[in-house]
Image (cartoon, rainbow, N blue to C red; front, side):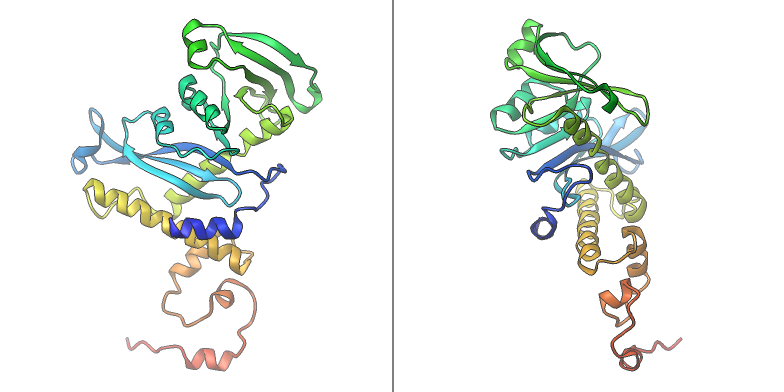
Length: 289
């Protein structure tokens, strides 16, 4: 958490591509890590399978996780909203797996803003609508209320419903949000920025190998996951501090093969020549083979 705070203090105001939003923006999602049932019996997921879930809240300004919870594979994603720290004025972007009217209303009551996907069977009544430019991909921008007695009791306030057709994929998306000030197209771009958390999970699994564990207890698994997160945050801080042209994956590979070289980080990760090449060679320790 100290490393996360360092990263947020230094890079927490980094602009999000395609968006001009200064307020905190978070993406919420989870990824499943498969385990061997014979070794990890405490993490039984299905009849012949074990797994844990990594629930993550990612700060999209600095692309650093600010909340992580490791659970067994059976825990439904929506339950994590009960433990989520809500920051007033912040935007929370999530897929429709987190669509729970009571929990979304709790975010609304704590002055948080959310963007999520609507389900196909959404039962609603249109209150008002505004004209949209269909050339941008927008199809509708409406204020709606839920019609079902039970759902209306769980979320008594009006929603904003935005229909959008992605020009790249042609897929029709319908968003539900309590944000009224931002343009509809910005909200569609907000949801698109959620893809960063998928890239985070992919990077973590490919580069830090959290699919293979050194211990089999729940504590060992959680410890290794948190070590991986620490390494990721350190790489983010270093990558931006030295301003290298390398990708984070390339930088991690260079660091992994250079732990015993007495070279400055800036020299190792950039194309700059050393200040004193002769001293650099003299200070290098010799290994007898």
